[in-house]
Length: 167
Image 1 (cartoon, rainbow, N blue to C red):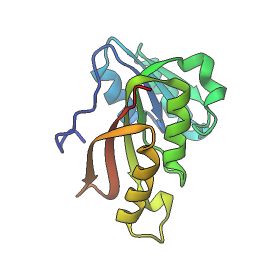
Image 2: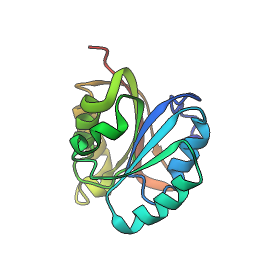
Image 3: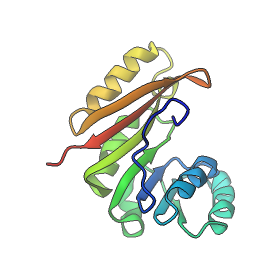
Image 4: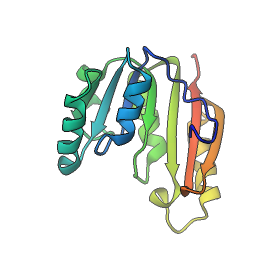
């Protein structure tokens, strides 16, 4: 996203809910950017959580959260209100996960940085159609600011930057 010139809407003191943190590589880069903020790194795989905990133990602004991003109520007491949701999940209901977490945690006017992984949503449909469908769902609660396909590294991934409506 950075190589593509996208503004990730991250500030030095941002509170970030990172959904799909996996082993923590990208989440650790986010923690570098928000050095005076906090990254709540949500991951549901026990195997990768071990690696994530190791990364978080080396960074004072990262909090590992062993939970399923589809169940935000299970980590409500940990994360609280955030400025940015960074979502990198490989689930078929990516937009729904973003929306339920935004309703629970994202401040009005806050930002969603999301990677829509078309083949994870539906491997039988043209990625452009998947992107349109997912963006339509997000459009009910977010204003789209930027979007770019992550070619050549991830040709079936669309990076999205959106701002939550201030309703």
